[in-house]
Image (spheres, rainbow, N blue to C red):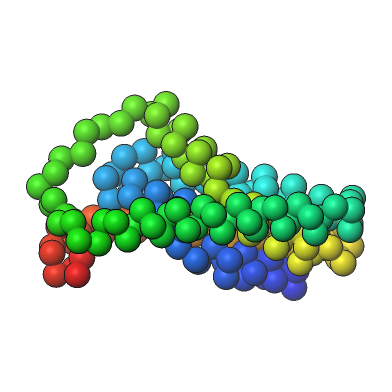
Length: 179
């Protein structure tokens, strides 16, 4: 139970940072488009990457991990700089609340979700490197329990932000709320 809770709260503390993937999930909730599919793909992907990280550190304990981690952290930094820059460019622009979003196809949403997940270095740094490294000294059974706890946190978080943004979308039409 200790490793389950440790995995849950460690993963939750990492995933709470709002990044590109989380914003995409929130955006889909606000648009009320394929929320379950987006949340499910993000959650399953996190679960997969969490266990890749756990077993990667289990089998290759210290081989090349510092170099790979450095490469992913540099990619993460570049991605975040680009993401922040693109959001800063939007600061002075008005939000159009009357805009009706056209329905995007399910295939398009699946590819976008996979892109926001697997092309986001932040996902790898959190799931593979931080959680994998965190659990590297655990026994195999403890690693699996830790991974289950981390995966449960991911499922809970993605579905929570997806459906909460869907619920609160009716309040998002208010300019005061956005300010």
